[in-house]
Amino acid sequence: MEPERPNYGAIMVHLKKPYWVFLILLFTFVAVLTFQISTKDILPFQFFGVTGSRKTSVTSGSDPVPDPGSCAGLLGEFPERKHVMSIKEFGGVGDGKTSNTAAFWKAIVHMQRLSNKGGGQLNVPKGKWLTGSFNLTSNFTLFLEDGAVILGSQDPKEWPVVEPLPSYGRGRERLGGRHISLIHGDGLTNVVITGQNGTIDGQGGMWWDLWQNRRLTHTRGHLVELMNSHNILISNLTFRNSPFWTIHPIYCSNVVIKGMTILAPLNAPNTDGIDPDSSTNVCIEDCYIESGDDLVAVKSGWDQYGIRVARPSSNIIVRRISGTTPTCSGVGIGSEMSGGISNVIIEDMNIWNSAAGVRIKTDKGRGGYIANITIKNITMERVKIPIMFSRGANDHPDYGWDPKAIPKIKGIFISNIMSLNSTKAPILAGIKGGSFEGLCFKNVTLLGLAPTAAWHCEFVSGCTNAVFPLPCPQLQNNGSSACCI
Ligand SMILES: *[C@@H]1O[C@H](CO)[C@@H](O)[C@H](O)[C@H]1NC(C)=O
Ligand SMILES: *[C@@H]1O[C@H](CO)[C@@H](O)[C@H](O)[C@H]1NC(C)=O
Ligand SMILES: *[C@@H]1O[C@H](CO)[C@@H](O)[C@H](O)[C@H]1NC(C)=O
Ligand SMILES: *[C@@H]1O[C@H](CO)[C@@H](O)[C@H](O)[C@H]1NC(C)=O
Ligand SMILES: *[C@@H]1O[C@H](CO)[C@@H](O)[C@H](O)[C@H]1NC(C)=O
Ligand SMILES: *[C@@H]1O[C@H](CO)[C@@H](O)[C@H](O)[C@H]1NC(C)=O
Ligand SMILES: *[C@@H]1O[C@H](CO)[C@@H](O)[C@H](O)[C@H]1NC(C)=O
Ligand SMILES: *[C@@H]1O[C@H](CO)[C@@H](O)[C@H](O)[C@H]1NC(C)=O
Ligand SMILES: *[C@@H]1O[C@H](CO)[C@@H](O)[C@H](O)[C@H]1NC(C)=O
Image (cartoon, rainbow, N blue to C red):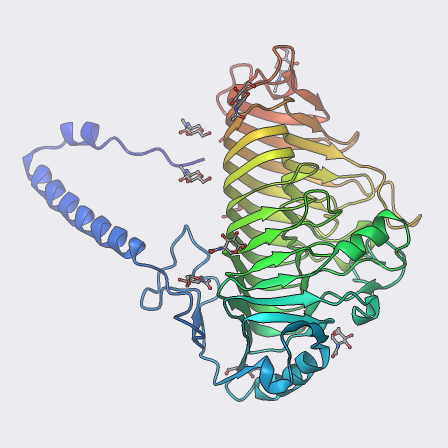
């Protein structure tokens, strides 16, 4: 995929003297340029300044050229918030027992009035701030100071039931509406959730029990969900114990999630880390995630509802994420992908003690597509199935799904994978009548397998180049050189 480097030595042999001089000058020029660029790169990026600063930026300020290895450039600089207030000014009490729901609501109503008057920042100081669900507003920063912990209410009524998402048609777990997320936003622009590694703890145990005991009446809420929103930054915080998926941007664009620690018990059901859903221009980097479900899962709606809404996820970058999930995968695409998923780059990940490394999940009835997905430089240790493409678990919203809606999977490029102490060779199961096409595996080394371990392939086609163990026949190039480029 990368362009061949020109062989300068060979070029020079063919050139006569005047060109030599010119080339040396050119080389000096290029070298100086390179040096300047590399010194710029090591300058620390200014995301926001010191303690309680109001200025937040995802660019390096003076440098208009975005660093290709960073989410910088996607959002630009957030203007300084003119008004900075503390939750205490709205009657908040950080004793871990007093409910702060009313204080957060009051604060937000106030901040909403400031959103076209220079914007507001709500600081949450050190302490434990118990609260029910609250909404964010535009041109707004929620800032958790060092030692600040927001605790999710243990009263389900404080997580009111809202409409299902149009692209899901119903709650993901139960028919009808779903509990709202602890921190929610709909139709917002220019929102920042950040701080000095403060914590938002959903105290999800109550919800996991309801789910496991089959006493849940409505789908569990997320920890943070933003809908129909643009220019979002979530950074430098610790999120714990989400009842359900932890961060869920849906129908959003220009979202950066960076420097987060996301933790849930390894057996807590469906506590996905970050699930970009029907969203575009999403950049997720430098996060540590351990949880009871996929660390990152890219989605775009469920069966006939997702097909009808037709909101794809595209231009998604996921990089430098590390973590573990013993029953699920490091990075997942799907299984809900009915609005289509394309132009995704997943790179520089480190995954250990997990059931799967990279997993693409889809099914009959999903419709939609998964196209142009690049996954590279992933290291895994003790991951059972490093690479898995699977069709269905018969997981449909209702009887209205269309068995003729076969998803199209095309153009999946997987390279530079090293897996130590893996248990199984890749499992690649396409769909009858809907083969997964254009799969390319390059420089993939899976060690620790039993000598008899073999790739399992069904309804797939594509190529391999420098993979171990030997791939299935469907992916053998048989001498063709026009493969995997
Ligand atoms: C995260 O915190 C570090 C250290 O305080 C700071 O340098 C950086 O700008 C912050 N980044 C973001 C995106 O908030
Ligand atoms: C947010 O701030 C910008 C620029 O300051 C302003 O143009 C916009 O109207 C504000 N948005 C809202 C919802 O008030
Ligand atoms: C929060 O937003 C949701 C969805 O937009 C809405 O249903 C709910 O009433 C809002 N809650 C408050 C307290 O404003
Ligand atoms: C933030 O806090 C979490 C949980 O305590 C910790 O694991 C993580 O290392 C901290 N992150 C930073 C950048 O200090
Ligand atoms: C494939 O995805 C990458 C990364 O998003 C993008 O740069 C490239 O243009 C895409 N190619 C096509 C053909 O869409
Ligand atoms: C591969 O990813 C690791 C992080 O997991 C990173 O340290 C390393 O620089 C990456 N290698 C390349 C060639 O980008
Ligand atoms: C193959 O991938 C490994 C990482 O898994 C990397 O260190 C190595 O440089 C890659 N080799 C080539 C030729 O790209
Ligand atoms: C892999 O397994 C071998 C044998 O059990 C063990 O010695 C080694 O430490 C393991 N390596 C990793 C990276 O788990
Ligand atoms: C390569 O050859 C094997 C038989 O040796 C065949 O089954 C397979 O389909 C061929 N692969 C391609 C991509 O042509």
